[in-house]
Image (cartoon, rainbow, N blue to C red):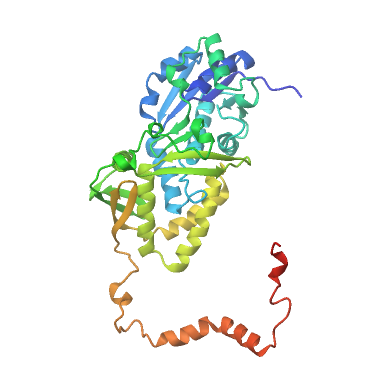
Length: 420
């Protein structure tokens, strides 16, 4: 079967070495026009001079869209409301950026009447799945081109040589040993010294957070306000999502908040090590947890923790546009109806210390929790409750004492598994 002709491609473009080289590679190998798209998610200075660089690489045009507000309100906030954390520590800063980029890449492809989209993800990572599955969900007729799965370039040196051959403008910063991904939520670091999990990250690698030993010697208190699970204010001042995260990133970064060093299980089956800096995200996540602790009942909170694990898995695996994630959002929305209030946090040398929490919907009542005699709780009722609660254990113990239920199946012989 003949491969359909590709006349125009929309490339997810960052301006880094890989995507810069992809532009001439697509033109040379597919004979197509290349339109570049860059999502402004808060990369700041990384966007400087991007248009000139894209056009200098051979692209016909470059779209840049400021998606910071959409990123936070439609992707970050739902994930934070769900309490989703991948493998105990990762707050999913890269994961939920990809479906948003794919959404706008598809929109531009339709606007430009392009035949395909392309990305610079390697064949080893998770991002290739996130981009392509999102594209399938949004426009299954678009073809996706993944050069890293096709070309002969296998190293940074190969890419630099290719850039020189086709006169692609590449800055000296491309020699950085780390692979990074930055947005307003986090900054990730991979590769270089981090490929050996025994190596401690070097202090110069970090860009958003101070070293704990160099952080201020005096703690700083902040008050985060939430409405229905979303952060809306800082120290009593209402703020939009972008402004709030910019300020929290500065505050958290100054106090060394949000560093995470993990070895995670990639979707494709291998382990990888990543170091993440997530100052604002860490503060909001911790504050949200504290507020939920007084606003959610026991059974809802326990089940929500189960949902959070599944939600994180879906986001990490690139299943943002799945029916299951949408359904879980419905459950989360119900749980967040009363998650409104304020948390007070103490920031000190990498630590986020709880200093207080309050809510008009709090289920905590000091008079109910006290040891005094109250109408709502009679301490004598505890005796009957304990008898019923412990009844299965009591019956089992009575049967064993009487010998009527002692069998080989009830009490396995674990000595068989002991080593000599």
